[in-house]
Length: 345
Ligand SMILES: Cc1ncc(COP(=O)(O)O)c(C=O)c1O
Image (cartoon, rainbow, N blue to C red):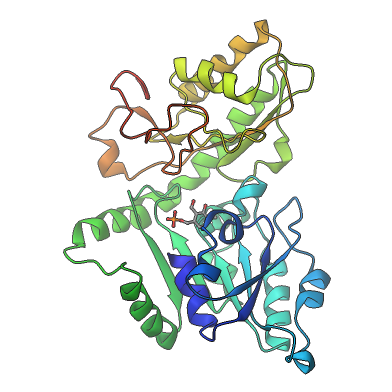
């Protein structure tokens, strides 16, 4: 809802156009809400492997206002930092500033989907406020590695937020007695931001471990933050679906994304080195079995708030809320959770 509201505030006139990455969360994973709910026309432009979009491609996607008789009016550019589908890679402050300059030059707004902006900040060692200086609005998830059970915030000018609050209410997002969630948000911001660097180190350790397993491959250079993608190499007999089943026996849940492309998100309360080894060891069992088709998988380490962590088992693997059906019986992962299944102690 954070991205949706932000786009809607910037593109209040129906038929406005937004330039965004063709591999961005807003374009791929948000039910096309900007168009179905907001009447906003998406203009997807190719994302590079590192999550950037070439500046000249952005510029050439901006509609020429002289042809407004035919064209929708470009009003907004969206970036995503860190970029989830590229494996959590970070957009540099220099790049964002250049896109900001371009937006200003053409009278456009810049929104940053900063669901994992704190991860980007930790990896780049650039403060968040500097990282988003060129933006007119930013959405931030407090649940992505920072550990709040739910919650996103959006940041913008006073008038932006005033309008955003009204839209939030319209969309059914107004909440009462919400202090308990705010408490978790405070823990996320006050206690967990500084722990992200540990997550990143652990993700790298995991990536290196996976890379040593015959039949799997990880592009180590792409592991900049808390997400690890890995491939099953060609010539293997196993596919991601089967791998998911095997890993489930080891307490590690992989999430199939589609029949041809599977991804797994592993939400871990506190991923310590021994537990990383557990992930790698579970996968290492596959060495004895040949693996098949090249299928990307993703693991992400996103730790919940420490106050919740204290009450729960050390390593808890939570399935992702959008767990799709092909791998299982289609039931919700939370409903189908058995006490012996996703928990590894
Ligand atoms: C890059 C990115 N943007 C936005 C979101 C949206 O967050 P939420 O699911 O809290 O709406 C997510 C969630 O996974 C995300 O990964």
